Image (tube, rainbow, N blue to C red):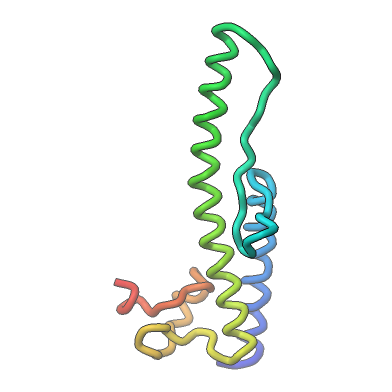
Length: 122
């Protein structure tokens, strides 16, 4: 792969990394003990009492559950981006991890952190 093309993919991956980290920062905090792991923030509210408080707490639990799913998806994407950036540095970017063939450029343009070619992904 040409250096200019690699540079373009590296730039795109870095931009996606920044975006994923920004989204994660909205809903989670980095786990200082486990690199690459994030912990969802629980949307704690005030100390209200009564029925309205129970409804609000139920809403907060539902939102937290949604945040967990989003956090996992963003963590997975961020990990894949980091792997792709490492591959650029060590000269293995764009090669399928399963069969070793070059991943088509069209696939990489859409999914630059793709670890597999289309055939091996299926």
